[in-house]
Length: 416
Ligand code: HEM
Image (cartoon, rainbow, N blue to C red; front, side, top):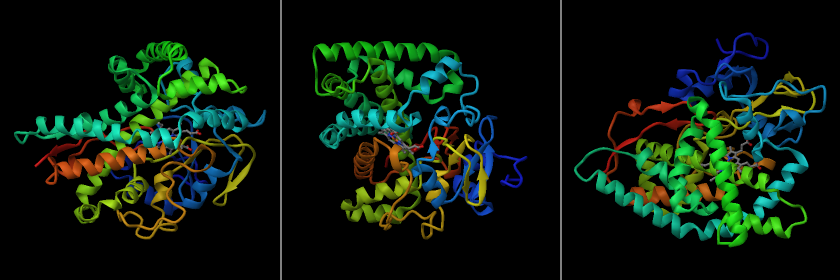
């Protein structure tokens, strides 16, 4: 039985096998049951789960909902929410420094500083490199699948494209990328690499401090150099530790998410050949199509929020400081907001839009980069391999547990 606010004794398990196998159906059931339910993940503490578009949007945009429980006024803070069972507390403390977990003036200040370095111009300037990296990876895929052998898209393309792009943007030298890919793999599944994590964080932080020192001495055209420049010009100084955390959150936030947007989108388009045909007919539709692909995944939910005071949401009284989880995929497939919500429609008029990149003060900083990468990657992939097909039955694609994302472990494809 699914829990409701009236019946909080039973709770939704956000990692239940049926939800992982078919998130649309599971969220539809939850959404129609009640606007607010209770649930948990990985045996963590209970949370309030918000299921409908308008309420999810409110949680993401109303400043009453804070991103860090420590910001809730004294005496009201609920229990610290952690999904990282089995990960030592020094690691959780380190992770707690991410931009998404900072509120109010501190957040505005840091976001302004990083936005000055992470500009639309820098993203647009990266497009030719994204195209080049894509072409190299597609060449490699063509070689691997030459004799009809299925190629795993996740391993050969989805992992490497965003990883390479983010490393180039930030300014990680090619020689150091193997280390970053190794750290990335450990950080993607922290629960399985709990004992390695303190060492991974230390290695990452030491490495970034060394890169910052080297760019201070000799600036280049990369994000770390731009941040160093902001640091030097701005009275509102960015400390080295803040910079390490910022760069670290950008690399983490930008990698796995984009990887799954590309993978899930390939699956969705193979499943809807009529939509793919529309894109082949008129490639100028791609930028719009990528927004529709974003609406339907990979984001399942955002970071938890903590109301600064007692609040009513969807007719349910939620106490100050209690963790509230905005179920973004549920909002994005809410029939109250989108017609035929589970249908992929690359020409859909979205009006005020989907919530796949969040909304409000914490709206995804990397959205333009992610959209650009997905557009370049998908267009190039389907052009290069016009007869691309899934090498296994759709039900055999292995899905994996990822906090907040719909993620395939492997997508075996036949290239022609
Ligand atoms: C398809 C790829 C991506 C998806 C699905 C995605 C999703 C999201 C979502 C849902 C949020 C808001 C979470 C919330 O409010 O609870 C967010 C925030 C954020 N994203 Fe992304 N993201 C993607 C790509 C990127 C990239 C490429 C970068 C950086 C290079 C990035 C950096 C960030 C940062 C720094 C924040 C926090 C912003 C803040 O707190 O002010 N993301 N992202």
